[in-house]
Image 1 (cartoon, helix red, strand yellow):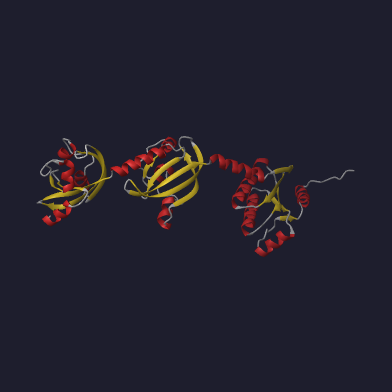
Image 2 (cartoon, one colour):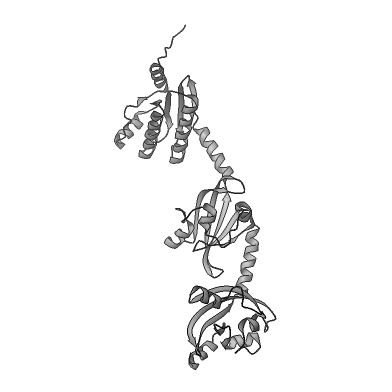
Length: 366
């Protein structure tokens, strides 16, 4: 390494050393000399810099010797004699094949004390939140977990891959905030997901909000907040169930009056509830009344057909009632066919047909 290069290194504002593989300091720039206030050249690095009698547990030279890598980065706290206090450094090391006839490393110490203080203050604030919170790097590594997260997941989280330790997966989720940030350049993302919390031994529903951080511990990351909305989702489900009642109106006959808008979520619950009721009661006929359905499009019609087919697979029959002229016209325009399903414009007509199918006879008295 020429004198010109050493002059350049001396002008760098970060602390810089060139250290041989035998731990001898071969070069120190001006910032190093100013901050450590002692003769450094020719001294053993861990003795003069750290007052230790052996190399550190985390050591770039040891990494280079053991793993055949050419660069290494870590963080460490050091006491600078010039400041008489402990400072936090981001330390980057690069191997050089030859300096003054020996193999060596260039080690740069950047003071990140202020940043670490800010991080600690943020972590202290985040730890007090009642929602589960993580800071996760763009490489999916969990960098921070607040008290609620540690309590809920009951395992070591820091340094682990988020999707492996939280979801027991070997790859990122289909819906992933980090993937969204990488692909679309957004800085906020929100979605809902079900997770099994070890502390509760049951599945919970979470509203998950994510915000991008340009830098946390030296890397790009996200803050992800998980708010438990299980109780709210149960209430919503109860309301949906109440809005789609299953009524046993006669032996072996169920009626389902549909009212309002039949969206995909409600349609799924309607199908699930009806099929469960058929199995539970052993009913042979399900009358689905659409008198109160305000609007039918292709999606709603397809939901209805899937439900009718599912009822058939259970060995029961379906009757669709309440088909008004405008709904019939819409179904024809959409090219939707109900096949061999019995239909009626009135609920009473559907009930009469159900009686005939079951062989029941109605006697008029009076």
